[in-house]
Length: 629
Ligand code: ATP
Ligand code: MG
Image 1 (tube, rainbow, N blue to C red):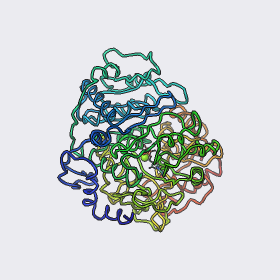
Image 2 (cartoon, helix red, strand yellow):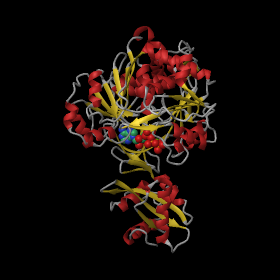
Image 3 (cartoon, rainbow, N blue to C red):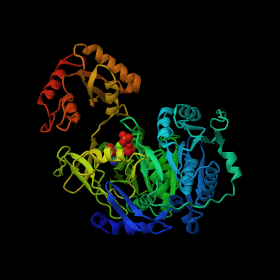
Image 4 (tube, rainbow, N blue to C red):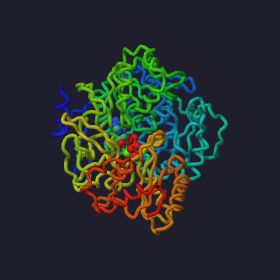
């Protein structure tokens, strides 16, 4: 079928379209209504239907493909590879589910999973799904404080952790981080289930709280745990965004809509069907890991490859050797991952037989053209940039080779995927912009199946964060975009500006908050300014409450940021001004500030409230950093 027809139908007749897609999964009870949309922007897909993610990912495949590999968990850190069939996965998940129940975890209870990228993390997720518990996986690389924040928001009944992760051969003990997080949290979990990998065998146990998985596993070795059927809109999991504005947002996902969206994406976008193999290099702690290391491939009856280790160890050909060995059809990685390989000899791309590999999908950040060309030439495969967010759970923009492969345009993640009614609109007026004009990428509600249903326990925040940027009710992606005359969309960065300092993403808002905590700062705008060495550096424009002590204040602001956010975030320059340029609606015009700081044209200033503010900025730049106004 033609892509255009498929997409048009999903927008013009969403109920018929999604009713058809819903047949790809098993329903214990058929939905009463495909879409309920009487309380915008909230919507309920497949209302009244009952299903279960674990059943669709595991049990359902047993008759036809029980002996096929479901999961291959490869660790180049420990040297261990585990090949797990659907039968074996079923076994492990039943045992894990029985262990959860024995710890009094049930439907609706939250379970925080803080683990490295290993098979037990997948068992734990699926076991939660089986019994209707709501998992919240926290990326194993997060520090104790980040873990504590997520614990306090989710209020879990149980935390599941491993003794340690490993990176580049260096063991990173998790238990001290878990203990520190539990000590910091106001709602620490009453129980901690420890999966001991034997990497840090002597970790300290907390009596009465910590339990050992291996012991309980033995006790429940023959367990069969019934699937708990959930209404389509019950929460399946929470996944926290990194939260540049303080408290992280708990992205809440449903059950039925998510399963249906993943099933559709697996064949139409990733072109992977039952019996085929998908290799995503992501981590279960991220959205890609949830959707395309765990639920997506398993719902499709495919084989999923999970990888713990560096892309360069034992050698830079490791990913391609995995593709050869397991006959991988579709691979999924990130531009960063490819840039790591780009630093190595390109001959590593040629050492393995990649005849099974059809596509390499890349997502998570802009795919720069040099990198896209380098990898396209290097492996001679179709490289597909795809754009999405933790919030959406699956691609918003992509090409769909399973349906019809449209030409790749370098620099663009392609075309809207089914159900996404996208517009590029003017930041201030909210009007759709002309082709090739910059605007904000927005989604016309209702959001399609698979996207977040709300912010955990905070409906108001869901509306405020995503749906209140324009006078009309639209979901703002908070990303800049342009759309060309063929409908290809190009992503130009975030409206709330995350800057990249020496490869680290820093939220400018976070730095602004830190600068603003200085007692003499009235208001601050932080932007990323191009820098030869670091890519970008943070630069501050601030207004003071009390004029005349600009130089000392500037140094104190820098110290403030270093102390609170680390040396990387330390502002390179601080400019004290009498006023900051703002739009009429009161939004800071960061892009104009940035343009001026980079000696570029500040662009369209029709939205500027006070022209003097811009003059102020120009004068401050001419005077130099740290000087008073
Ligand atoms: P937070 O929302 O907490 O600040 P985050 O936005 O970095 O975190 P994600 O949801 O993982 O977390 O990232 C989604 C964002 O990543 C998108 O909004 C976009 O800015 C960027 N992005 C993802 N894929 C692409 C892509 N293919 N091209 C360009 N940008 C992309
Ligand atoms: Mg985001």
